[in-house]
Length: 314
Image (cartoon, rainbow, N blue to C red):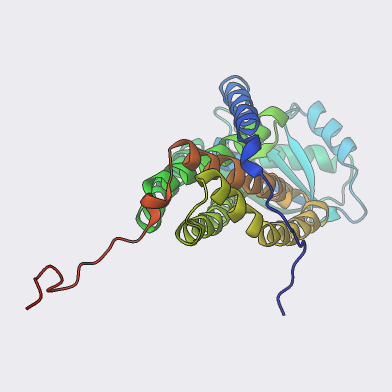
């Protein structure tokens, strides 16, 4: 038996709000691009390089006291956060010109042990600035290649208008997600980059489901206008969209609140991306396809001429 969250007796006129939605999206995109140009992103240690030190305390660590101690030792830019439990602490320090990672680690541990002699150094890692620059370049290239491959795939499976709408929706989702991290100055590390790529996949899946239903209804409903066909298709996929989004959001909320500091950025990016991706599959991908003049003729399967069909009967 098929489960339905909503039973709709009439079509929801999604496309009647496409102009206000496109205006809102344009404003948000411009705001995100402005923030990215002025504030930029708060790059994490994975991209900027620096020193990462994990320490352990016998009792619960006082993060504020640790920050004050490091500030007194001239490490005021250190990022201090719990790692897994209240006893484990992760310290991230930006690179210092002419100072080795081992020296930085020794200085940090000496300042911490001056306050609490039982502090245990678990590990120390160093990421060079050249590695961070390479990760930045490869991460941007990965997103670009993903968008190009999606453009080709959707164009081959559906029609080029749907392909342009899908890529516009994905670019919309990526820019707004990056804009969120830029405006709030949340740390952008490799886990967040992975989340952005996951947002692309999630949004694409939703867009393809909607596009497939639109193509199917264009072939079945002969006497309806394109806007009406799109509204019918979006209404028919609404149950699936809501159920999928809600179940995904429930998992992400658990990660957001219980996953710890290291996964917080990943969960934040995916939470925002799922919400904005659901919106874009309706009001960006479908609206762009409609604006480009998608019609029944564009989606009808080509007629295959049978051999000997054009011969005159004997």
